[in-house]
Amino acid sequence: MAKPNNPIDNLERSMHEPKRLAILSVVAAESDGVSFGELKEACDLTDGNLNRHLKVLEEEKIVRLTKTTGEGRARTVVIMTAAGRKKFLAYLDSLEAALRQAAQSAGKPISLQSSPGLSPEHA
Image 1 (tube, rainbow, N blue to C red):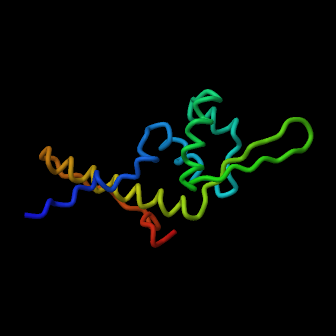
Image 2: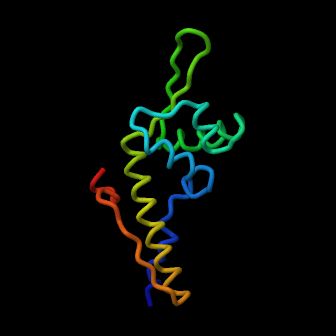
Image 3: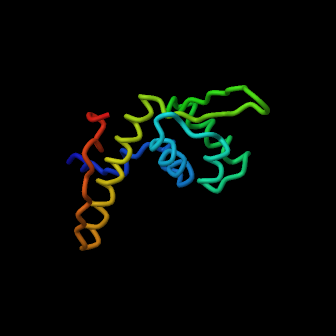
């Protein structure tokens, strides 16, 4: 007998850590990217913790870091890649399926309203 598909098995592990999910939620909302300082503040992280999470996301090619120099200090901007956006949207779809299954198992069906463009084929 084949094992039923468990949506939790489809969750992207590099995105599922709560602070990484917070980082991606902030970065996904800004097509021009988010500065390191803004991201640090928005996600309530230290420099070291943010760097560690960004390294994982950058290695997975989910985000790209660009450094600009101008007057004063260098500025690091975090931008979601096109492939990263597709992965993130697929992750959100898997998370939604996992939540539906958990609610149904607990005896409380839920209705999550999908936004237009939530699925990866709309990316």
